[in-house]
Image 1 (cartoon, rainbow, N blue to C red):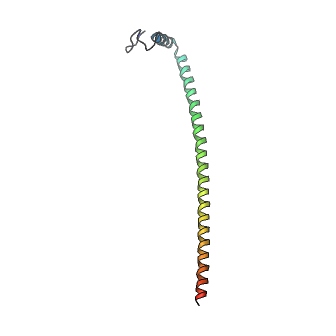
Image 2 (image 1 turned 135 degrees about the vertical axis):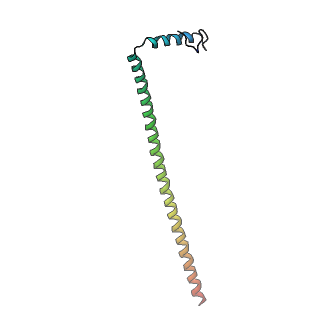
Image 3 (image 1 turned 90 degrees about the vertical axis):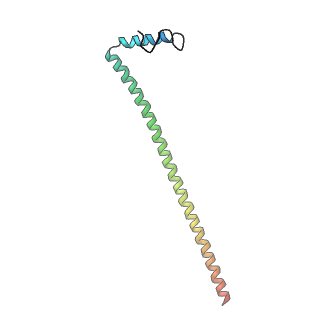
Length: 105
């Protein structure tokens, strides 16, 4: 049985048209239940693949969220260190200013 878009003997490889013809013939003889079972098995395989992808993406998302939390904590520590250093410098300048004012009096 040849479909409209196919010409016998013109497959990309030797014997490809025979293989496709056999496959079409097999499917034509399948019962509706066999075809349904084949589709269900294919759907189950797809679900397993998608579940695996989702699990992988969820793990990656958790990794990224943890990395963001670490980076935010590091930024907060750096900001606190800079503020402490600025306060220390301000105090040193204030003491020096008081010393200079006292020496002028």
